[in-house]
Image 1: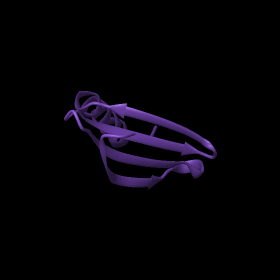
Image 2 (image 1 turned 90 degrees about the horizontal axis):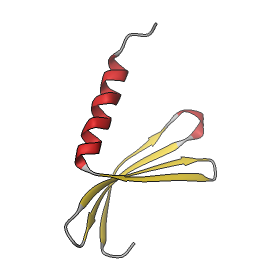
Image 3 (image 1 turned 30 degrees about the vertical axis):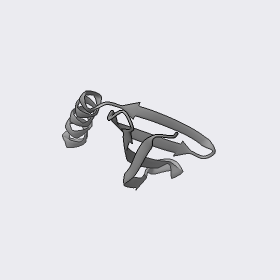
Length: 70
């Protein structure tokens, strides 16, 4: 997409051969989003989320990761 500055933040090899890439996207208008790219074989899912969504998502993931196994 034109007018975007893209910075790759991290690349993650996830279970079952999935690949996750997190990118910081800055649009020419000044809007900043986190782009999440998930590759599953030949299928791609791309999500652009704002800071508020990223904070809620990261809090939920952190809480889940800290839970003891049952």
